[in-house]
Length: 233
Image (cartoon, rainbow, N blue to C red; front, side, top):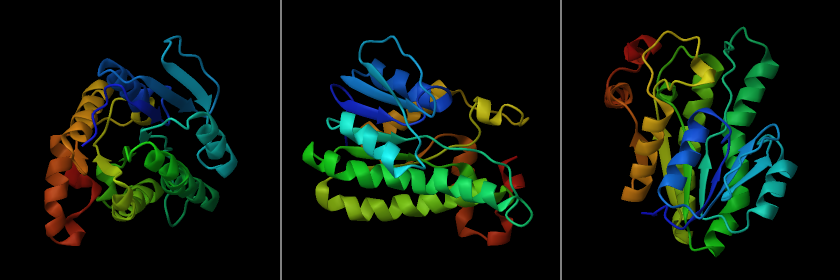
């Protein structure tokens, strides 16, 4: 388990939505410094927040972040995209961008920061997945979240030797710009962020942030054809 107090934290996609809530939450728990990233430059006036432009699809950009964040002890891989492309009929470039951002992006960040975390005592990596990791019918986005779930589980095994806690987060719909047009019940980013950090500090390897996610996870032992998007209703 990793306590946040006095730690140095990286939050990708920290400008808004869940990422911004995670920045707020770790600061409230006493984080010493937070590196908060976004694709475009932005300003955060708080003295212990360092903003940085990051494109997780670029190894060069990730390396530039690591250059300034060599004191990092906890990494939240939150940055992601929701491109509602069908796997069968959507533009292949959109499918590829979804996987490059949601799967290879967190992997790039983790590979780059793993030696930094090891040098700083092990720390933790927290990857944000989705309830849609387990539900068919959400196209490239759901498939990418299923893939990062598997990547996280494998990273947990590979990072165990350096004592890095690896946490996978599954959440239903969160009230953010990404899903503003979807007419489903949504959790607040602040509530989800609190549950995530609670899990991290309790030593969890997986955090299910809401009742819908708990219900869907329980259904994994049933017939695979029942794992459709409608199950979340």
